[in-house]
Image 1 (cartoon, rainbow, N blue to C red):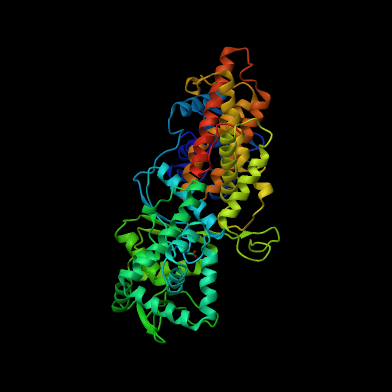
Image 2 (cartoon, rainbow, N blue to C red; image 1 turned 90 degrees about the vertical axis):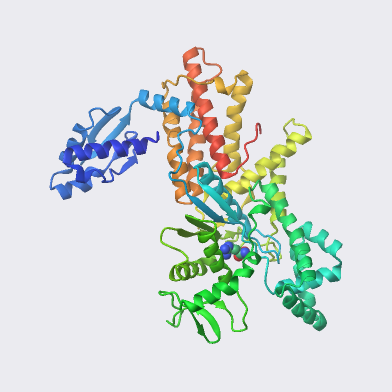
Length: 574
Ligand code: ARG
């Protein structure tokens, strides 16, 4: 691990132990970036009180124990330790990072099995923008966990079951299978649903047929199941088009929709009832997890079997959590789902703990996804108030990106490829760069801009580095340095790059891809400063040139790897 903040933390902790005894070896030295040095350690202030000594005295004692330190340490003000690393240390660490295929990113030992529940659109309706963020954030988390050596099991918990399917199947029969399939594959799921719904409301005979169809579907009638498969097949083929366009790693093998748990629901309820975890209340089977009360101060039920005998969303999620712990052997389960389902998951997790299905050794976490807002600050919708179709929105992003590169002399194929990469980067990065639980305003103009903290800006930075190697006709694998730091912009860039491993690990463990985004943005900015101040190909001194090329190679590797972990494509040129 080369991250300077981590290295310094260890060094200062050792100094603390030597100066004040081993009971201080775990104290947080409070290392922060500093205006006056590379970093400052603020620990002397907090420790002084406990030791009944002045902060300056404490700081001096720590400094005295840092004599073998690869840099300078000064005591300033009331007792800050200002730390400046030696250029040679930074250069050596950066050189090591360049020769390390993992770029200083460690692996998690022992590795964990991480189940990630994400995307999860509903088949009864078309996939809409609400599912964009859950898909993109979840996919980035999957990529990051895999990169750290964890076993990732993707679970696409499709909404593929329930009463609407009676009406949908009847509508499919009315339309004719072929026509229905064509409509669904083309992404007209919403229209399909609305047409079925309209008939259901207007036509008594259709309503009757639909109700009967729900029952035959639930009873497992083979012909009805076949029709359900026809409907689902077409719907999933459309979902896959969206995933392909987005470059999302989900495949059909990751589908574990609600229907998958049907056969387990009765046993789920029986087991909960016989263990006394669930009780009958007003005819429904309910779990009352402690600590949840409604507005009337009465205990809040998690209904797992309605009074009419039907199962619901919570029943499926309880069966799913049991399956994920017991069969998939999860160490960690991440639910990348909208904020508005927070209470549902809190109650499901609590009920699963009560029943013993979620032991303390397994952590179940709701990665809350904030709402996407329109420019008016309300839920993002079309002008006529409908929810925006994901495909339309992605197409618009690609069109905007195409306009951006309209004046470049590319052939049509290359142009289309770049427009696609830039459009997806714009949308995906915008989703990832804000903390996942916060709401954000969908604004394509800002998202496709090549300046500011955007996906296209980062793509541009890496494409610019690639063009240096292209123009110089240099194979970047040969750019191995040695790295020597002269100009301040070289030093700042190298110091920045050293933080990569730590930030990847942090973003992964905390489920916060936006930390990686912020790091990559700072890296691209440091590279831009370097590039403006330090000639590379035109540098006459061969040693300086070699060092700068190595810094270019390392920056490129970090940007490429980082963007790939986010699922943002890296075009060769822009
Ligand atoms: N299909 C649900 C929705 O669109 C999300 C499912 C999330 N996963 C889960 N295990 N409940 O709201």
